[in-house]
Length: 353
Image 1 (cartoon, rainbow, N blue to C red):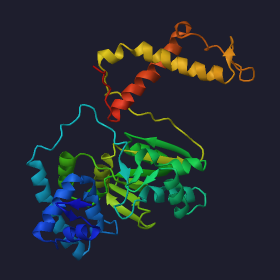
Image 2 (image 1 turned 120 degrees about the horizontal axis):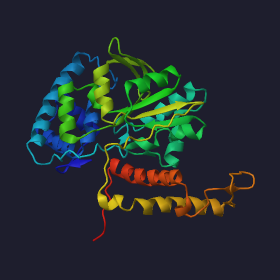
Image 3 (image 1 turned 90 degrees about the vertical axis):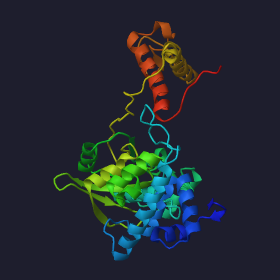
């Protein structure tokens, strides 16, 4: 890591967090954090390795120094024209990666290890780490949100990945005995809410850490969280602080259990498509049917008036124009929602000139 021709090491980030840097080093670190806002969390974690909101006197002094430096950094960035416009659609952070910090990228792997062992599957974190690396799920910068749960699914667990979840979703899953992994912006558990909002407004959402939710106590406004990256101890946090940190992942949960599954598709209600895309709706829908029908026929299926899995006959093996309207509507929904999902995940579809 380099900034202004200076290597930005973990030691330098820790010194910056505690205020023990020269003016040159401070400016270099600030430039680096402007270019790599996701590592604001790294600085906080290096300052407080216990992942606890209760800071001792030394950590409190360090936090005050860090907050002063962060204020200066935010003011510097906010005074520039680098802040992007808010998109018309709330983009899901599917490409974000969960990693405790630049030293330890294993938070998602350790969460899955905890889930597997809790549900009766004996496996070590070292074995899971090796497997995740071999399959490309674990990268140097962490685990992509959409890859969390792959290790569990490979061992037969039912895994659901869900955006736009609520407290009620968490409580229902915990009541069923599910293991609930949440992705959060870890730094927001340490930074005052008003400052966390400034970070979001300036740098955008920064989901970067996976934790286990143990319980939600709405009466006392507390969230009991477990961080397998550090220990198996449960810590209590103000509910509003947890919700602010969790919101940065668009309220993303990975839920594991042994025997039940409830679909939770991405909410696409706010996504609209241009007329030139919508006019192609029937083209998309017909191609969806053609792809399905070809795969069926290649697998030995043929048309028949009744569905028969033994004789491999299917009444839907007809040209698209001859399908029942409800079957066409299913193809349209599948096609259009796929296009909407791309937009929701941050991609754009444009016609070549």
